[in-house]
Image (cartoon, rainbow, N blue to C red; front, side, top):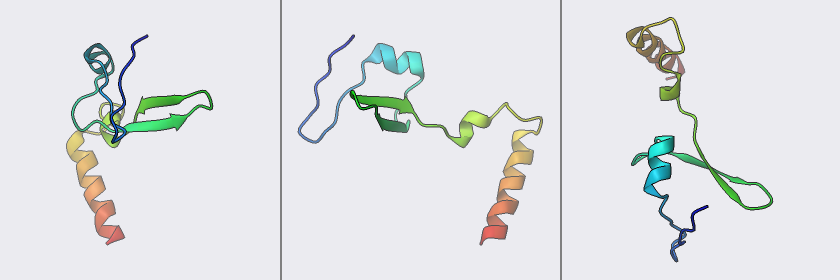
Length: 73
C-alpha cells in the first residue's frame, strides 16, 4: 500500500511504479468509481484500446469512422 496526499484542489500524484505498471501517461483518462468503501481509479476504456482486435487495418477503420461521421453530420 502507498499513501498519497490530496491537494486542496483535490489533486494527487499516482506513484511512478503504478503509472508504469498500468501504462498511465500524461493525458490518460481515468474512471473514478465510488465503491462504497472508498474511491477506485480505473483506466478509462478508449477506442485506441481496440487497435489490434479487428481483422481490419487501421486505415480501413479510419475510413469507416470518417463515413460514420459524415452520416452523422
